[in-house]
Length: 263
Ligand SMILES: NC(=O)C1=CN([C@@H]2O[C@H](COP(=O)(O)OP(=O)(O)OC[C@H]3O[C@@H](n4cnc5c(N)ncnc54)[C@H](OP(=O)(O)O)[C@@H]3O)[C@@H](O)[C@H]2O)C=CC1
Ligand SMILES: O=C(O)[C@@H]1CCC=N1
Image 1 (spheres, rainbow, N blue to C red):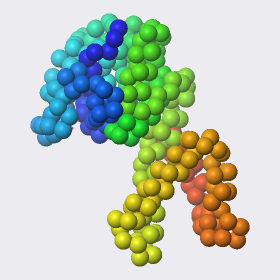
Image 2: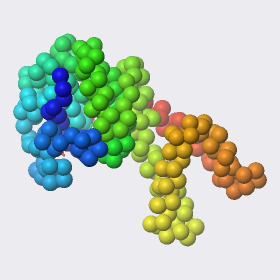
Image 3: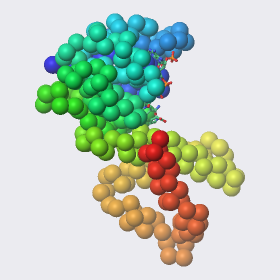
Image 4: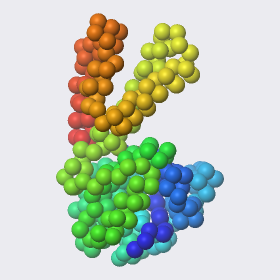
């Protein structure tokens, strides 16, 4: 089945990021996409900003979609699924994006035959640089998997993994952009403290993260080796790194990810 009609139940931060990525970077047309929300505010905002079909009728979107994203908060999944279950066609592919919602739970909420892909996306989808990690259930055909891989790749990278890894993915991918924003903000504050104007501080901190990420990706070198290239013996960088190590920088990141996993 070619994916022609894409539906979203819920259209908040994550759905809007995916929709913008699909349209701006993936070549999908706003006419192919419809979504629902509760408030008039979101409905008007999304309609104006993305030009997709918006409404409050979850059943209609479920009935008309070839692929249906469940883009509400995890605690709303059960209610929303009960509402739309009877409308979902056998060939429709359901995409979950909620932390912790398993394929087994989805089979019990829909049916054993429903095609479900458990995914963990992230908000850089908005700029076509998302990461979607996914696990399909056994009802998807090879062709379905090709189709979803292509769709998820339209707004960034996509990697299929076994479902047992999915609970560990938010810590390093779904949630992790938030830590990176915190790091950029902290570096900018440090620069402002030294007298660098705020706007320039954000530009420098952001470009450092962007450039460093690109170095890791494009050189293929180990991050430790790239770090060594920056670090002059007896110089300034090693002073900064030594201070970060004393303050438990790496341990703090790893502990934060353990908290994310447990939640
Ligand atoms: N934010 C992120 O970075 C990521 C989020 N996720 C997952 O994405 C999901 C959504 O999160 P996020 O986008 O951040 O949340 P938001 O609160 O931004 O969006 C939730 C959306 O659901 C809508 N909604 C609520 N109840 C209903 C309903 N009964 N029927 C239809 N729509 C409804 C809301 O409408 P209204 O706007 O009118 O209130 C809102 O548009 C979660 O399961 C989360 O785990 C996954 C990865 C990353
Ligand atoms: O904070 C959350 O629970 C969601 C999942 C990943 C990012 N945001």
